[in-house]
Length: 325
Image 1 (cartoon, helix red, strand yellow):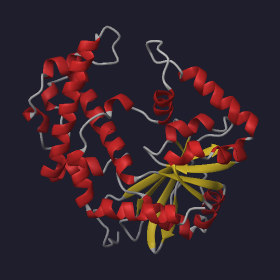
Image 2 (cartoon, helix red, strand yellow):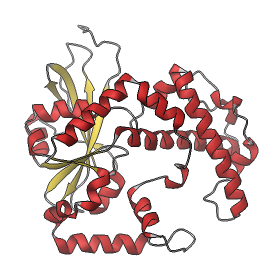
Image 3 (cartoon, helix red, strand yellow):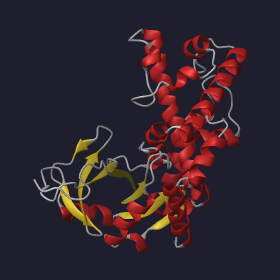
């Protein structure tokens, strides 16, 4: 098998297509995909497009994938259908291009805001893995590692027993217990974010996650080659509420108003039955893990600002918004 210069590199990116009316809207992890699916055409499934870089010149197209050149680089493209991520075994290049021709809106997000949101998701998953090991005695919770080689959390001066035994979503927690748990959570996040700049393997785990990794440049290249970039309305997810015309165009006003009413009725009260304020309601329907995001991001911001790859992600983001329709 012939090797090429990319042999040994694990290069992969993906994006999600949500059917809205008769069109697809393009989004990514931590770019409002959860909110957007509330407006999804129920008769159609979401599609996840996964793209890997061919690391061998001999790599061939197989059932469920196509080989496609993106600016001269051979890539393998897969399409996964629905919430069960079933591989589309009948994918062809013609079918893939027809899918992409249906796209009308590309939702993007300020890269630092996405990075923060993805980092919170990543460390929440880490915490839950530790808690599961601690409570269910599947093994030593101290051996649950954020990276394959480093027990970074063991140096954090936290009340670990309390932190792992309690959880703010459990209904028997008092306000004082919740406050104590979130005090521990804030310190946990702060210490871990400090380690992003201290240890290369920690930053690699964080920046290589699907919720945080840069992707805008890859997709800009792909959409340009597919000749759809100039047809897309490009919008920051934070502006979507101020552009109801986009959803109304796809869905019709009656359907749009019906979905908004259902959302409000379903989520206007929190888990304890308390009425959410307008701000709290918007945060809940637009964002996940909101209550865990009130932490100190200073170290994370410093890492982001000095990272070449994230600086360029910010440049591409600004370019896309400048040329948006």
